[in-house]
Length: 93
Image (cartoon, rainbow, N blue to C red):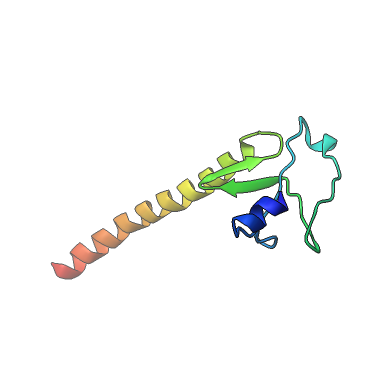
């Protein structure tokens, strides 16, 4: 694999790359080590790919929790803006 990378002048940034091993359960997480060049790779239980959080058991709970937090913040901002609108109108009139 590294020969193909070198032939096409492609480089893997080991510091920014995460690996996920998909398993049926969290308890069955195998302990593998992977070395690229002289750096050890790290395995993670979940990773964000574009806007989707994928975990190693293909359970959507981490993505759902993250989405709920973002929606909650957005709804709070919308609700707070209603009060700002009424303050704005009271100052103008």
